[in-house]
Length: 146
Length: 146
DNA sequence: GTGATAATTAGAATAATTCTAATTCCAAGC
DNA sequence: GCTTGGAATTAGAATTATTCTAATTATCAC
Image 1: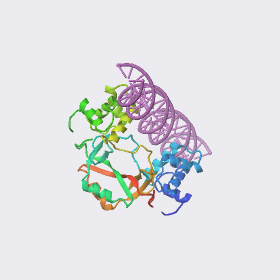
Image 2 (image 1 turned 90 degrees about the vertical axis):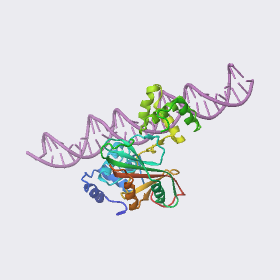
Image 3 (image 1 turned 180 degrees about the vertical axis):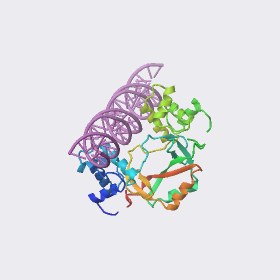
Image 4 (image 1 turned 60 degrees about the horizontal axis):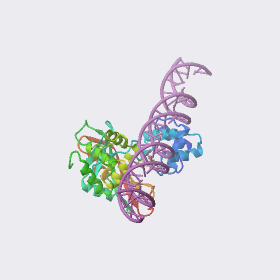
């Protein structure tokens, strides 16, 4: 967007703006994420980073990514580092993930909204599953199913 | 819903209706999921199942759960058994997960729709993150960012 | 400069999931 | 009715994703 391949100084600035130390590891992790704007996994980032910094460890890549996520420089696509959960409610519904208690509540979706959601997809995209998750805090423990 | 605690015959019927053999392992896994309609992890299901079948293995619980999901008897909440992905696009947007190629495409969301999404939450629920993922097939490789 | 303190790194450990060899089940042939 | 072949299912072992923590590096006060 701004610059095609950001240089050292620009990357430094970006990190310092978030009050994090611009370490070489963080710079190179941020660099590879901005260079190729796909949605890499931590392991893919690790592979790309090793090209210019062969001694880095995967754990450090995880650390750097977490820092960048906290800074708001990158987003996690599945921000769910937790095990898969199973649910016998087959109605079309969304989930509310309570960050305080860790509980998951079902949220009913009006059918009209589902239609609307299908409409936002550009031509050529055909979704058979729509997954909608809200994350936040619930005012005390309300009443619903968890 | 139908019966509070389903009995052996009812569970059998439910499995046979899906053309899967009603094995003891599958029955007991289905039973614990229906008994306590929370959103257990595979490990939690494992723990509950062991009470009545101490010899079962965690791998079998995974197998049974997968079968039940394929039958449409239960749903996976994070149907993403893949590593977390990272994304430098900070605009409010959804993701389209192409089941054919495995690629992830960004989908723009009209601001009006985001407002609408916040409205479906019952009073007392406050979401700071909304995660919306579509899964399906895209007609050839369209053009968008992946 | 030097030492105390905090931040960061990366090897080792853990947790979640999948692979595959062994077992069980069923049906057809004898 | 028993036996054999083949498919389905199970579960131990292996793999993959993530986190923990000891060691290192950097920063600040003196």
